[in-house]
Image (cartoon, rainbow, N blue to C red):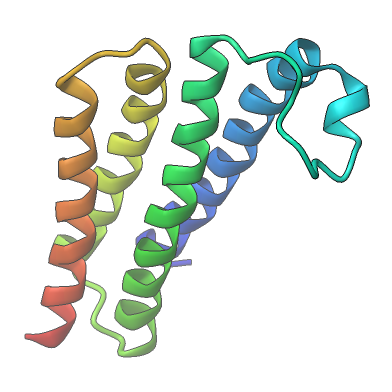
Length: 131
């Protein structure tokens, strides 16, 4: 398996871990009555700031993972895997690994800088495929 596909697989596993890190405290804080419902209305109680941040970090990774998955797919299907695209993939994953605790702990502006690094790595992979 290429480095890019390996990182994509690890990023998907990170997404699963992020879901658990968010879902467990959200279920505790909101209760099963709400979390197992159709959620047609807002919950009667709020989540803690950290749990809400973990939820937003999860949503953010879904968005980032789409672009990263496209970048890996383009590089892989066009057989343009290089040391550069592999390095970009690893930078993306490391940035995502750092982003979760940075967001959960409310580290500003650090989490934004971490996000920019991961986004830039994805964009550079796409640009490398065009060159």
